Amino acid sequence: MFFKKKEKEKKQDCKVHFKAKVFDKKAPLRRNKRKKNFKLKTSPIKPFRGSCNSRAKKAKRIKQRNSILAVISIFLLAFIAIFSGYTVINFITGIRGGTSADDISYETKYVMGIDTVPIYPNSEFVYANNMNEEIVMKMLNQGLSAYKLSRGTRTSNVYDYYKEILTKYDWEYISTVPVSTEEALLGQYWLKGEKGLRIYVENNDVWYELIAKDEAKNSLSERRKAELQRKRILETSSEQSLLPDYPWFLLVPREYLVRYSPTDIGELQSVEIFEIAGDTSFWIYPIGKSDSGTYRDLLEEFIEKKDEDSDEKWEVLTTKQDFIKQREALNTTLVVNGNEGRGVVLMNKRNFFIYAIFTNDVEHPFFEEIIEKIDET
Figure 1: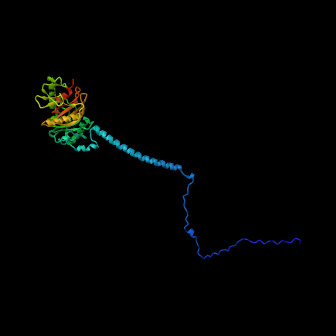
Figure 2 (figure 1 turned 180 degrees about the vertical axis):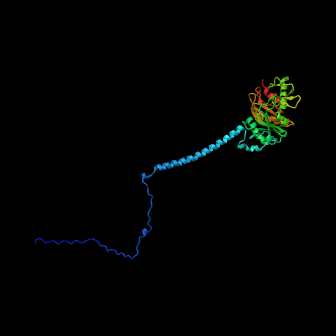
Figure 3 (figure 1 turned 45 degrees about the vertical axis):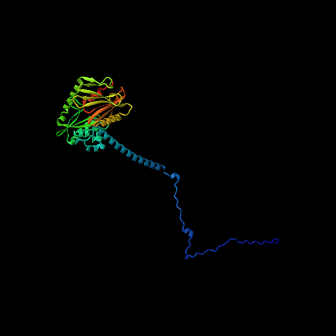
């Protein structure tokens, strides 16, 4: 009783109570407008590092590389096969003297002045730049024609080619004489009706000549005998020499006369050797100093001057570099006084002047004797 009970303080409850919202089932649901355009973002699922198959990728790369190499190898093999085939065909046809694909067009062309005789592949008419000259027309009308062969062509190739192809043009093969003998002239001989044909190679030119039927059958034996007889006469006859002070030494048969003439080159003289009973002449003429120009230039200058001073035609037709008597030389075919001739240009080692030795007869045997025997000693 002494103690008075303390009145307990009443603590106020602080909880807040909200009034529950009553939903009307019949009322339409309200949607959040923000969720209306809501989209899920897609992102690729990255595989784990350990899940990549490196062996498969490596095998794929190797397969692609092998495919590329296979395609390249096929192209290379095809190129090698085509190139090898082309080379083999050209090699075989070259050995046989036949034609290659590049030569087919030549088979349709015929020798100038001679019908039904095709020209040899890659050969060119020697007088193509002189077709209007009288001497060339005269030669063609007589059934004589010449073509320059390409470099490296063998005589056997020419003969083999015509032996294979001329029978297709109704030519009958007679014989082939590779080297002149006492009974026959070199060449290949053919026959067609009453016409004969001789084909021969000389100085890298192939010559075509229409001859008589009997001449083709006996390989021009009569002409060869006449040449040999003429040569023997020249060899056995007494000879005369040129003047002692002349730069060249040469023995000349008595059937020829020798005449000296002055020239425009100082005190040097020219020599004319001509037949007593014939129309053939031979000249030895100085045309310039060794350092005054090329052999061809000096020759053309000399021939042009002769043409101006003469009533007959003088002209250089063809030239060819050569090596004669251990020195450089120039072989030439030319027109001399209106006649077809040939010549040689070379240097005299005694006075170092250039000389032209030429004739107005392309087939005269004495010209060969001059070239063979003339010397400075």
